[in-house]
Every structure is written in C-alpha cells, then in structure tokens.
Length: 136
Image 1 (spheres, rainbow, N blue to C red):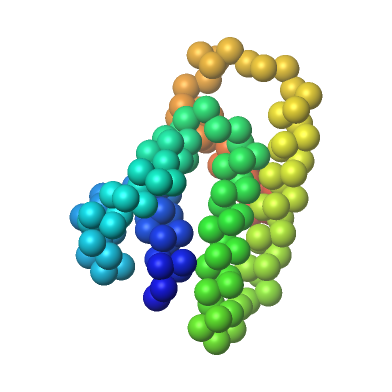
Image 2: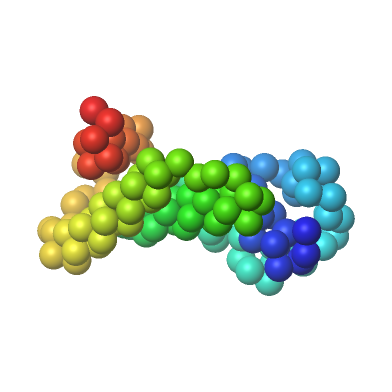
C-alpha cells in the first residue's frame, strides 16, 4: 500500500476504532514515529474526540460513517470483490439521513447538554439510524 492509502487507514484505526499507535503500527506495518507525525499533522486527537462523543453534530457523525463505508466499498471494488447492492443502498440511506439531520439541526432548538446522558443520546441515535435504515 502507498502512503496515500496507509495514512487515511491509519487515521481511521486511530479515530474510529480507537487503536493505539503501537497496534496500528503492527497492523499496517508503519513505524510509530511516522504515525506520530501523521497524527500531529492531521489533528487525529481532535477527530478521535469528535468520534468518541465530543460536540460533533449527529449529521457530521453520519457523514463520517458514510465516508468509512464508501472507502470500504471502493476498496472492495478495486480488489475485484463483488459488492452486494445492499451495501450501496445502505450507504445511500446513511447519506440521505445525514442530510435530513443536517437540515434539522440547522433549525432545531438547542437543548441543554445535561438533558440527556451520553448513553441516552447514543441509544436514541442508534434507534434513529435503525429506523431510517429500515432495520427496526
């Protein structure tokens, strides 16, 4: 894999999968020193905080999820793996849901952060995703 492919993969493992730099180094065969440089250049800690429940809007989290799905679909296509049509449909639903959430968040009244616990917010978000994807 080239640097152009490894760097986003490393960032994904750090931010989304919450892996340590040492674990990422072993997984993708890149030195921890290089990972530290990439981490500083691209502000991985801020991205990790956002993904792990920071102040990032729900629509932005959905777009990030869609980006990860799209990257995996693209990689499968490049590897010659047949991509199930359901994966494209799920990606489209996530994008559509994210767009609806973005529009709603732009006009919705802001809630006091203490109204829902992080667990309650996560549960509600999961329920909304399932409902929108028709998985309920």
